[in-house]
Length: 174
Image 1: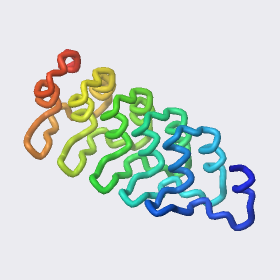
Image 2: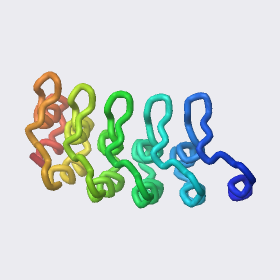
Image 3: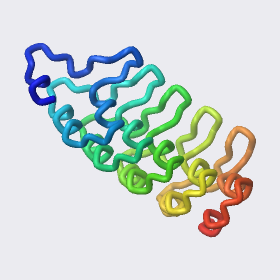
Image 4: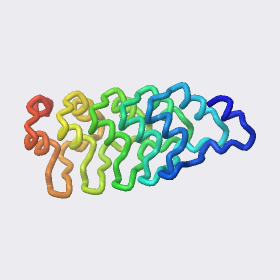
């Protein structure tokens, strides 16, 4: 990667048929050393989007690569509230998949919108509750400005979702 980055006229933001960049590919596999090299490259676009409007931060959050998420969160101009085509954020992806370390980093990020909702009005809290990730639910509940009574398009709250899916341990944190 280093040799390629040093090549004259290299396009660090080149995309494949799905509009994935080298940064997205390294983030997906958790290759922190490669992510660091790419982030140090001149003209890197840390907020580049693929065909589904995913960013490298969303990819790292989805797959739980905390080391990569940390580097991306430290990058200049990172958009922590970027949304994909369905209005999912990196926080929602990490919460849905139970990646507590990434959720914690995102909650600590400046300007994070903890109550962001996707196109069907589902929030990170609802996603963690639906999936039974009690540790993530607890982090979200402890966060400043969390709206515990937010509803999705059908009027369901996070508590209703947890009850519906039968996650008793998650219900214990409410």
